Image (tube, rainbow, N blue to C red; front, top):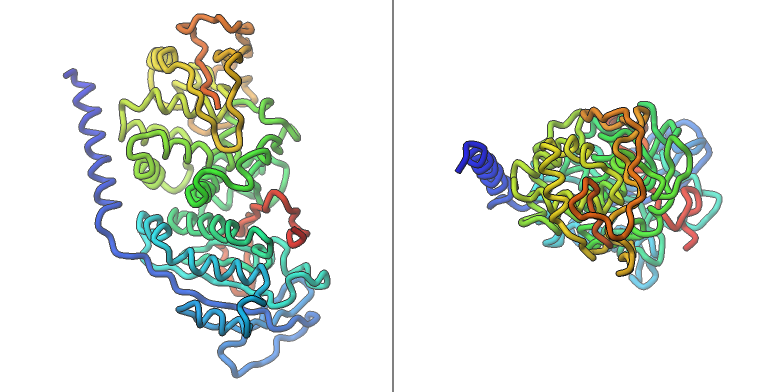
Length: 451
C-alpha cells in the first residue's frame, strides 16, 4: 500500500471508531411533556394576577392570551387535560398533538435522539381549544407568535393550529422530527443567518424552496433530512413544491438554478442528505457523524462532504452521483473537485466510470430511456457573481460547453446525470429561540387551517 492509502485507512478507522462511540450503547432519551391549553383571549391589557401556578398569560399581538399548563406523562393524562369526554370529539389539531405524543415515545424517535449529545428534552404542546377554526383568532396561528412551532435549546414546541389538518398524523411526525432535529444539532447559531443579507430578499424566516445563507440552509436541511427519515423519503414538500424556488434572482424553475444555489435551499440539502443516507454503506451513521463533526459556526457543504470522504475514502463515485442527481448535474468537474477537496483528475475518472443510474429522487420522475445521459450545455464554471458558497473559490470563466449529443464520449469532462423560521423572542422565551417558518406547502401562512 502507498503512504496515501495508509493515511486514508487510518482516517477511515478513526471515523469508524468515533461512530461506534457516538452511536453505540447509550441510554434512552427521555422526553417530558407540557400541555398548554389556550383558555381565553382578551384585548391587550395588564396581565391579571393569578394564584394558580398552572395559569399563565402571553401577549400575542394586541391580545392577552390566558394559558392553562399541565405536565402529562401518559395518553390518559393528556386526554384528561384536553377536557374532552369522548376521544372521538377531538379536533384534528388535538389528534395531531396526540399523534406527536405517541411518536415522541416510539423506538424510531428513540434511535434518532440517542445519536445526539442530549439525554433529555421537553415537548411543549399548545392546544388552541376551539379557537382553531375561528377567524377572529387567526392571529394565534401566524408565524412569529409565541405559539409557532419551534426549537430552542432542549425544548421544542408544537401547536394544534399547525396540526389542524386531515393529514395530522403525517404532519405530527414530520413536525416533531424537524424540531427535534434542531435539538440533536444543539447549535442554534445558524438562525442568525436568516437575518444576514437574506438571499431571498426577506428580512426574516425561511421556507423549503427559498435560498438563504448556506450555513442556515445546512442547519435547516439537516432538520428536513429528519422529516424525510420519518416519512421514508416522501413528504408534502419533497416533490413538485421544490420545482419552483425563490432566489435573489427572483422566482425560478429548478432547471434555472446554478450548482451553488442548490446548497442555499434547505429542501434540496435535506433531499441530498437523505439520498446519501440511503446510498452509502452504513449511510445514516455516516451522515450523522459527518454532520455532527462539523464545527458549529460557519458550516459549509464542503466540510460535510469532506467528512464523508474521510470516513469512506472509496465512496467518491457514489458521492458524485448523488450530488449530480440532486443538483441536475450543474457542477462542472472543476467545481466538484473544489467542493469535495480532491484532484480534478479523480472527479473525471469517477464520473466517466459511474454510468447512468435510473434511480429517482423523491418526487422526481425518472428520465425516459431515450433521454441522453450526458447533460447538454454543461458550464465550465459559474460567473464570478455566483461564487456564493463560503470556502470555495471558483474560476470566473463564463464559457459554456457546447451542447452534447446523445452519443457524447463517456470519457469526456462532462459527467453523466443519474436519473431519476424566523428568529425572534417573546416575553417568556430567550433570544436563541429558533422560530420555524417552514410553512406547509399546500397551505399559506395565514390560512393553513382550511384543508
